Image (cartoon, rainbow, N blue to C red; front, side, top):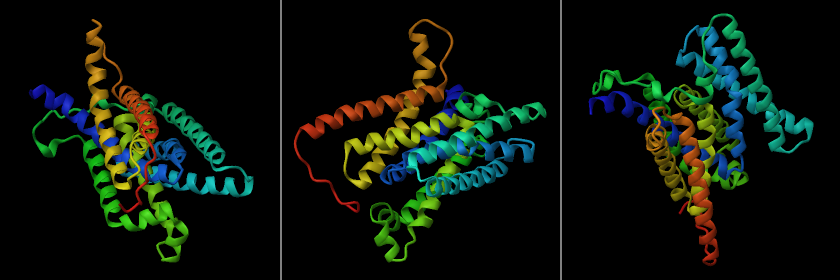
Length: 302
Protein backbone atom coordinates (compact mmCIF):
# COMPACT_ATOMS: atom_id res chain seq x y z
CA UNK A 1 0.00 0.00 0.00
CA UNK A 2 2.85 2.38 0.79
CA UNK A 3 4.29 1.70 -2.68
CA UNK A 4 0.93 2.63 -4.21
CA UNK A 5 0.93 6.02 -2.47
CA UNK A 6 4.53 6.69 -3.42
CA UNK A 7 4.35 5.66 -7.09
CA UNK A 8 0.81 5.28 -8.42
CA UNK A 9 -1.19 7.79 -6.35
CA UNK A 10 0.75 10.93 -7.42
CA UNK A 11 0.63 9.88 -11.07
CA UNK A 12 -3.12 9.30 -10.85
CA UNK A 13 -3.64 12.63 -9.11
CA UNK A 14 -1.63 14.50 -11.75
CA UNK A 15 -3.41 12.72 -14.60
CA UNK A 16 -6.84 13.31 -13.08
CA UNK A 17 -6.19 16.98 -12.37
CA UNK A 18 -4.76 17.64 -15.84
CA UNK A 19 -7.57 15.77 -17.60
CA UNK A 20 -10.32 17.42 -15.54
CA UNK A 21 -8.82 20.88 -16.07
CA UNK A 22 -8.48 20.47 -19.84
CA UNK A 23 -11.96 18.94 -20.16
CA UNK A 24 -13.49 21.86 -18.25
CA UNK A 25 -11.87 24.49 -20.47
CA UNK A 26 -12.45 22.51 -23.64
CA UNK A 27 -16.22 22.91 -23.26
CA UNK A 28 -16.05 26.63 -23.91
CA UNK A 29 -13.81 26.19 -26.94
CA UNK A 30 -16.21 23.57 -28.31
CA UNK A 31 -19.31 25.72 -27.77
CA UNK A 32 -17.61 28.63 -29.52
CA UNK A 33 -16.71 26.37 -32.45
CA UNK A 34 -13.00 26.85 -31.69
CA UNK A 35 -11.81 23.42 -30.59
CA UNK A 36 -8.87 23.78 -32.97
CA UNK A 37 -7.82 26.83 -30.96
CA UNK A 38 -6.97 24.52 -28.06
CA UNK A 39 -4.77 22.48 -30.40
CA UNK A 40 -3.18 25.68 -31.66
CA UNK A 41 -2.47 27.01 -28.17
CA UNK A 42 -1.08 23.68 -26.91
CA UNK A 43 1.39 23.72 -29.81
CA UNK A 44 2.03 27.45 -29.90
CA UNK A 45 3.08 27.73 -26.24
CA UNK A 46 6.10 25.51 -26.86
CA UNK A 47 8.40 28.43 -27.82
CA UNK A 48 7.32 30.25 -24.66
CA UNK A 49 7.94 27.18 -22.51
CA UNK A 50 11.41 26.66 -23.97
CA UNK A 51 12.16 30.39 -23.79
CA UNK A 52 11.23 30.50 -20.12
CA UNK A 53 13.36 27.42 -19.48
CA UNK A 54 16.37 28.94 -21.26
CA UNK A 55 16.06 32.24 -19.36
CA UNK A 56 15.64 30.49 -16.00
CA UNK A 57 18.24 27.82 -16.76
CA UNK A 58 16.03 25.18 -15.14
CA UNK A 59 12.49 23.77 -15.08
CA UNK A 60 11.13 26.78 -13.20
CA UNK A 61 7.34 26.90 -13.38
CA UNK A 62 6.92 30.72 -13.02
CA UNK A 63 9.34 31.52 -15.86
CA UNK A 64 7.87 28.89 -18.17
CA UNK A 65 4.32 29.92 -17.30
CA UNK A 66 5.12 33.54 -18.16
CA UNK A 67 6.72 32.43 -21.41
CA UNK A 68 3.76 30.21 -22.30
CA UNK A 69 1.23 32.97 -21.60
CA UNK A 70 3.23 35.40 -23.73
CA UNK A 71 3.39 32.86 -26.56
CA UNK A 72 -0.36 32.22 -26.29
CA UNK A 73 -1.08 35.95 -26.61
CA UNK A 74 1.24 36.19 -29.61
CA UNK A 75 -0.48 33.18 -31.20
CA UNK A 76 -3.97 34.54 -30.60
CA UNK A 77 -3.05 37.95 -32.00
CA UNK A 78 -1.25 36.47 -35.00
CA UNK A 79 -4.22 34.25 -35.82
CA UNK A 80 -6.49 37.30 -35.92
CA UNK A 81 -4.03 39.20 -38.11
CA UNK A 82 -3.67 36.28 -40.53
CA UNK A 83 -7.46 35.89 -40.70
CA UNK A 84 -8.06 39.57 -41.37
CA UNK A 85 -5.28 40.35 -43.84
CA UNK A 86 -4.95 36.91 -45.39
CA UNK A 87 -8.73 36.63 -45.79
CA UNK A 88 -8.70 32.92 -44.98
CA UNK A 89 -11.03 30.89 -42.82
CA UNK A 90 -10.24 30.55 -39.08
CA UNK A 91 -9.13 26.90 -39.18
CA UNK A 92 -6.52 27.60 -41.86
CA UNK A 93 -5.22 30.61 -39.92
CA UNK A 94 -4.90 28.58 -36.72
CA UNK A 95 -3.19 25.72 -38.54
CA UNK A 96 -0.66 28.03 -40.15
CA UNK A 97 0.18 29.89 -36.95
CA UNK A 98 0.50 26.92 -34.58
CA UNK A 99 2.54 24.93 -37.13
CA UNK A 100 5.07 27.74 -37.48
CA UNK A 101 5.25 28.38 -33.74
CA UNK A 102 5.55 24.68 -32.88
CA UNK A 103 8.35 24.32 -35.43
CA UNK A 104 10.04 27.32 -33.84
CA UNK A 105 9.70 25.67 -30.44
CA UNK A 106 11.31 22.46 -31.70
CA UNK A 107 14.16 24.51 -33.17
CA UNK A 108 14.62 26.24 -29.82
CA UNK A 109 14.72 22.82 -28.14
CA UNK A 110 17.57 21.80 -30.41
CA UNK A 111 19.43 25.03 -29.71
CA UNK A 112 18.95 24.57 -25.96
CA UNK A 113 20.39 21.06 -26.24
CA UNK A 114 23.37 22.48 -28.14
CA UNK A 115 23.99 24.83 -25.20
CA UNK A 116 23.90 21.88 -22.77
CA UNK A 117 20.56 23.04 -21.34
CA UNK A 118 18.63 19.81 -20.93
CA UNK A 119 14.93 19.81 -21.69
CA UNK A 120 13.66 16.51 -23.04
CA UNK A 121 11.57 16.70 -26.22
CA UNK A 122 9.80 13.48 -25.22
CA UNK A 123 8.83 15.15 -21.94
CA UNK A 124 7.20 17.99 -23.85
CA UNK A 125 5.27 15.61 -26.12
CA UNK A 126 4.44 12.70 -23.82
CA UNK A 127 5.13 14.00 -20.33
CA UNK A 128 6.78 12.16 -17.45
CA UNK A 129 3.74 10.88 -15.62
CA UNK A 130 5.50 7.73 -14.46
CA UNK A 131 8.30 9.78 -12.89
CA UNK A 132 6.04 11.78 -10.55
CA UNK A 133 6.79 10.25 -7.15
CA UNK A 134 5.53 11.00 -3.65
CA UNK A 135 8.40 9.49 -1.70
CA UNK A 136 7.38 11.01 1.63
CA UNK A 137 3.71 9.97 1.45
CA UNK A 138 1.37 10.65 3.20
CA UNK A 139 2.99 14.03 4.01
CA UNK A 140 0.78 16.52 2.10
CA UNK A 141 3.55 19.12 2.15
CA UNK A 142 5.77 16.75 0.18
CA UNK A 143 3.37 16.32 -2.72
CA UNK A 144 5.16 16.74 -6.07
CA UNK A 145 5.33 20.22 -7.54
CA UNK A 146 3.36 19.17 -10.63
CA UNK A 147 0.32 18.29 -8.52
CA UNK A 148 0.35 21.60 -6.66
CA UNK A 149 0.65 23.50 -9.94
CA UNK A 150 -2.22 21.61 -11.57
CA UNK A 151 -4.39 21.95 -8.47
CA UNK A 152 -3.76 25.70 -8.38
CA UNK A 153 -4.67 26.26 -12.03
CA UNK A 154 -7.76 24.02 -11.70
CA UNK A 155 -8.92 25.92 -8.61
CA UNK A 156 -8.49 29.24 -10.41
CA UNK A 157 -10.38 27.94 -13.47
CA UNK A 158 -13.28 26.60 -11.41
CA UNK A 159 -13.47 29.88 -9.48
CA UNK A 160 -13.49 31.94 -12.69
CA UNK A 161 -16.14 29.74 -14.33
CA UNK A 162 -18.32 29.91 -11.21
CA UNK A 163 -18.00 33.66 -10.64
CA UNK A 164 -18.50 34.57 -14.30
CA UNK A 165 -21.04 31.89 -15.17
CA UNK A 166 -23.66 34.28 -16.59
CA UNK A 167 -21.13 36.37 -18.50
CA UNK A 168 -19.50 33.29 -20.03
CA UNK A 169 -22.83 31.84 -21.17
CA UNK A 170 -23.82 35.10 -22.82
CA UNK A 171 -20.41 35.55 -24.45
CA UNK A 172 -20.63 32.04 -25.91
CA UNK A 173 -24.25 31.93 -27.07
CA UNK A 174 -24.98 35.60 -27.82
CA UNK A 175 -21.82 37.75 -27.90
CA UNK A 176 -23.67 40.72 -29.44
CA UNK A 177 -26.15 40.81 -26.56
CA UNK A 178 -23.29 40.33 -24.06
CA UNK A 179 -21.51 43.34 -25.56
CA UNK A 180 -24.72 45.39 -25.37
CA UNK A 181 -24.92 44.58 -21.66
CA UNK A 182 -21.31 45.67 -21.18
CA UNK A 183 -19.84 42.22 -20.52
CA UNK A 184 -17.09 42.59 -23.17
CA UNK A 185 -17.02 39.10 -24.74
CA UNK A 186 -13.60 39.83 -26.22
CA UNK A 187 -12.05 40.00 -22.77
CA UNK A 188 -13.83 36.80 -21.76
CA UNK A 189 -12.39 35.08 -24.84
CA UNK A 190 -8.93 36.42 -23.99
CA UNK A 191 -9.31 35.04 -20.47
CA UNK A 192 -10.20 31.65 -21.94
CA UNK A 193 -7.09 31.72 -24.12
CA UNK A 194 -4.93 32.53 -21.11
CA UNK A 195 -6.48 29.74 -19.04
CA UNK A 196 -5.91 27.23 -21.84
CA UNK A 197 -2.28 28.36 -22.02
CA UNK A 198 -1.97 28.01 -18.24
CA UNK A 199 -3.47 24.52 -18.46
CA UNK A 200 -0.98 23.58 -21.17
CA UNK A 201 2.05 24.72 -19.19
CA UNK A 202 0.76 23.20 -15.95
CA UNK A 203 0.14 19.89 -17.70
CA UNK A 204 3.02 19.56 -20.13
CA UNK A 205 5.66 18.36 -17.67
CA UNK A 206 3.33 15.71 -16.25
CA UNK A 207 1.34 14.51 -19.25
CA UNK A 208 2.80 16.28 -22.30
CA UNK A 209 1.20 18.38 -25.02
CA UNK A 210 -0.43 15.45 -26.86
CA UNK A 211 -2.65 14.56 -23.91
CA UNK A 212 -3.53 18.23 -23.40
CA UNK A 213 -4.86 18.37 -26.95
CA UNK A 214 -6.80 15.11 -26.55
CA UNK A 215 -8.39 16.23 -23.28
CA UNK A 216 -9.33 19.67 -24.59
CA UNK A 217 -11.31 18.05 -27.41
CA UNK A 218 -12.44 14.48 -26.69
CA UNK A 219 -14.29 14.68 -23.32
CA UNK A 220 -16.22 17.87 -24.20
CA UNK A 221 -17.13 16.48 -27.62
CA UNK A 222 -18.26 13.20 -26.05
CA UNK A 223 -20.37 15.05 -23.48
CA UNK A 224 -21.92 17.23 -26.17
CA UNK A 225 -23.02 14.11 -28.03
CA UNK A 226 -24.71 12.82 -24.89
CA UNK A 227 -26.62 15.89 -23.73
CA UNK A 228 -27.97 19.27 -24.83
CA UNK A 229 -27.89 20.70 -21.31
CA UNK A 230 -25.11 23.25 -20.70
CA UNK A 231 -24.33 22.36 -17.09
CA UNK A 232 -24.68 18.62 -17.64
CA UNK A 233 -22.27 18.82 -20.56
CA UNK A 234 -19.63 20.41 -18.34
CA UNK A 235 -20.10 17.85 -15.57
CA UNK A 236 -20.08 14.91 -18.00
CA UNK A 237 -16.98 16.16 -19.79
CA UNK A 238 -15.02 16.45 -16.54
CA UNK A 239 -16.22 12.98 -15.49
CA UNK A 240 -15.19 11.54 -18.87
CA UNK A 241 -11.79 13.21 -18.60
CA UNK A 242 -11.03 11.98 -15.08
CA UNK A 243 -12.30 8.47 -15.86
CA UNK A 244 -10.13 8.34 -18.99
CA UNK A 245 -7.13 9.37 -16.89
CA UNK A 246 -7.64 6.57 -14.36
CA UNK A 247 -8.55 3.93 -16.96
CA UNK A 248 -5.65 4.89 -19.24
CA UNK A 249 -3.14 4.76 -16.40
CA UNK A 250 -4.38 1.33 -15.37
CA UNK A 251 -4.24 0.14 -18.97
CA UNK A 252 -0.66 1.34 -19.37
CA UNK A 253 0.54 -0.40 -16.24
CA UNK A 254 -1.36 -3.67 -16.26
CA UNK A 255 -2.54 -4.47 -19.79
CA UNK A 256 0.90 -5.69 -21.02
CA UNK A 257 1.05 -8.17 -18.13
CA UNK A 258 -2.08 -9.82 -19.47
CA UNK A 259 -0.06 -10.75 -22.54
CA UNK A 260 2.88 -12.03 -20.51
CA UNK A 261 5.29 -9.17 -21.15
CA UNK A 262 7.22 -7.28 -18.49
CA UNK A 263 7.29 -3.80 -20.01
CA UNK A 264 4.60 -1.15 -19.69
CA UNK A 265 3.04 1.39 -22.04
CA UNK A 266 3.28 5.17 -21.95
CA UNK A 267 0.57 6.32 -19.53
CA UNK A 268 -0.21 9.63 -21.24
CA UNK A 269 -0.53 7.91 -24.61
CA UNK A 270 -2.93 5.31 -23.18
CA UNK A 271 -5.03 8.03 -21.55
CA UNK A 272 -5.30 9.81 -24.89
CA UNK A 273 -6.36 6.54 -26.55
CA UNK A 274 -9.00 5.86 -23.89
CA UNK A 275 -10.40 9.36 -24.34
CA UNK A 276 -10.68 8.62 -28.06
CA UNK A 277 -12.58 5.42 -27.31
CA UNK A 278 -14.91 7.37 -25.00
CA UNK A 279 -15.62 9.82 -27.83
CA UNK A 280 -16.31 6.94 -30.23
CA UNK A 281 -18.70 5.30 -27.75
CA UNK A 282 -20.47 8.63 -27.19
CA UNK A 283 -20.82 9.10 -30.95
CA UNK A 284 -22.46 5.67 -31.26
CA UNK A 285 -24.69 6.29 -28.25
CA UNK A 286 -25.55 9.76 -29.52
CA UNK A 287 -26.59 8.32 -32.88
CA UNK A 288 -28.97 5.90 -31.15
CA UNK A 289 -30.24 8.77 -28.98
CA UNK A 290 -30.93 10.88 -32.06
CA UNK A 291 -32.71 8.02 -33.85
CA UNK A 292 -34.94 7.44 -30.80
CA UNK A 293 -36.96 10.51 -31.73
CA UNK A 294 -36.96 14.30 -31.67
CA UNK A 295 -35.92 16.05 -28.54
CA UNK A 296 -35.91 19.61 -27.33
CA UNK A 297 -32.56 21.23 -26.57
CA UNK A 298 -32.49 22.91 -23.20
CA UNK A 299 -31.60 26.54 -22.86
CA UNK A 300 -28.01 27.41 -21.86
CA UNK A 301 -29.00 28.41 -18.38
CA UNK A 302 -31.10 25.32 -17.63
